[in-house]
Image 1 (tube, helix red, strand yellow):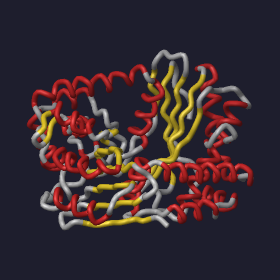
Image 2 (cartoon, helix red, strand yellow; image 1 turned 90 degrees about the horizontal axis):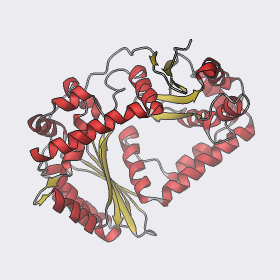
Image 3 (cartoon, helix red, strand yellow; image 1 turned 180 degrees about the horizontal axis):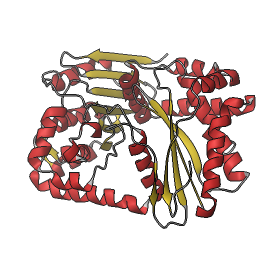
Length: 408
């Protein structure tokens, strides 16, 4: 039986934890409502820069001492900004969990945000942004999200050159004051711990943190259409997006099953019918991504410019004809893959902490392993087909990057 614990503090912070007694590690994930959707339009990229500056000194430690303290605890850490959330994650030995959380209390509540570190962080962010020009697959998918999602949901965490260059330390500190706060903060922990000790330790360091009011971003009621980016390349890059159902929808597992039939492994429809049968591309795939109130399927492929139009048409054909029928062996392959991923996620405390935070943010609860396995086991070809007929792939957003535009 899974041991799941949850506590909501008076300031709005949520602590959610899963005890995994057979491991010697523990992982944690802080999720704050400070992703790039909250970036002011004139300061795109501020969330990512802030995430990096937060770990450049906090409490009584400067940047060097902070890094040394986390390294001394053996914390394998990461930080960054997504669309909605800014995240700070780490994994370490179980005995080092509480000292690591104490350091992160300083990072979140008492950061230095040193002016001297802004230029190095900005330079790295600009280099990251410029590197996209050398990664055509990344470039087309970034543009696909920008075209498919309404503003500000399609933003890339890297921001823009103008936005990054406009940043000042005062503007960053003001953004911190408005958005880094306990209301909406999720701390997820997975590993070997004593719940009462963990809860009390977190309370001691976070319970007095006072929430502040801030305005949620306005989501545009419309979205742009697709388009073509012209550039001389050896391959035409193609991105395709269409709407699906979010994780909270009853058809969620059917939607995941449908994407799996399309793109799970070398026996999938896209790989077999587009890549292998016609030799139109080297890479092709589709993946499901969800937010609280919406979800989409994002597809990528790329091929020689002279065959790119055929590649696009055959890919769209596979997407639109999936509803015509699914074979039992196709679905069994997908179900085996989904259950294997669930089991492997249980083996990693870092993956489990991330899943706890994601479930709580998207659903307001944690899905148990048995619940997910039963949902996967209950899938049938007819149920997936029924879902596809109720929510057929269509109204595609198509973005291309290559020497010539393609016809939709």
